[in-house]
Image (cartoon, rainbow, N blue to C red):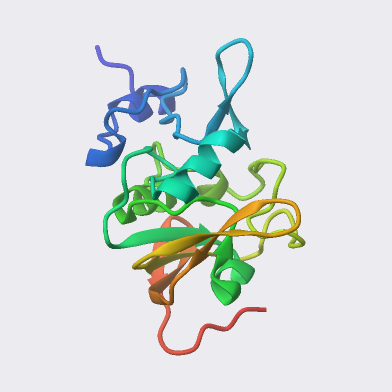
Length: 179
């Protein structure tokens, strides 16, 4: 008999093409390329590997799978990320980002479950830990930008923006209202 608990479901969840080569943790979650690995070898999803984050932003690699980005890429963040087009998190393949934001079995718990811990740095310096609203936006390119304390990704104009609500992407039309 095949177990049907949440961990077994996550291990059986088919991953997008770009994430198929990523290892999974014991709970079945894909271990992203920028996830920090603790000294005991276990992933720490609340921390980011700074060197890999820099590599992704600088070299145009997906922050989730580590493969080279294509022409269209996505970013996920709160209102400040959308308003400023500036993020600490590396851009991702659109397919990887959609999976993280919508797959209830193995997607990103931070995006899918309120109250889930996020790593110590907010997506944009000086913003609250967890925005009340989260968005997924597509852009054609990004550039590495340095501020006084860190490296960020400055995105080109967004083509599409969706609000992430309870594992669904809700398209935003016209002006983006960012509280």
